[in-house]
Every structure is written in structure tokens, then in C-alpha cells.
Length: 160
Figure: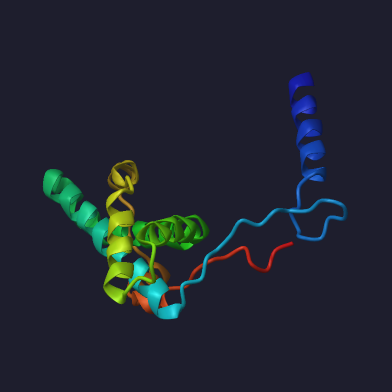
């Protein structure tokens, strides 16, 4: 019982120092954030990432034939991962753009997305999808069918 009380008090104390609602006085959140390459270039990067991450899902389904019925859910997970972590991925893309040392072309933006998609490890997620036999609902299917250029991104721009 004492452990639960101590844990509860520690949680309350920790929440006092966080900016959960975006208006806690005296605490400044440093926003390292989202890099905007423009709608078209963001779409090219996301499209390249989708392509390569979907190829990883295809390889997984070829290697594990029992996973084929869950391929669409694996594709959805890839998109959900990009949606939730776009702040980090855009910074990673900025680093790759800076390595070029010049303004990239459209094809180079797509190749940057493909390079990033190849380096992401998704197999652990895919094993969970197969184990729990996850299926798409209509909202997930709608997100899955959204083109890369129109795919929404979640940013921290309005926080703080």
C-alpha cells in the first residue's frame, strides 16, 4: 500500500513540472520541431517512406504466408507511424537534405523518403498484428487510402 501511495505522489509531483495542457506558468517547453519542406515535397518524402515500408510488409508476408490476410493492416500501421512521428522524421529528412549541400530536386526528395523508409524496422509490429489478428475498420481504411500528398501530419507547432 505504501508503494502505491508513493508512486501516486511521485506521479502528481512529476505532472506539476510538465506542460500537459500547454499553459502551465513558468515552464518553457523547448520545441525542436517540425521542418516544413512544402506540401509537395512533404508528400514526396512521405510517399517514398510509404513505398519502402510497404515493401518491408510485402517481404514479411512472403516470409510468413500466414500473415497475408493482415497485409493491409501492416500498411496502415506504417502510415500511422509516419503520422505520429512526423516531427522526428522531418528533422531526419532535414539532415539528409543538408548532406546534399544544395537544393534537392523532386526526385531527391522522393529518394530521401525511400532511404528513410528502408532504415525503419517494422517487423516487431508486424508480428503483433499477426498474433492479435488485427483488421481494418472503415476509418483506418480511409486513412490507408489517403494519397501521400494529402496525408495529414501531426505537429507540435501549436503547443506552448
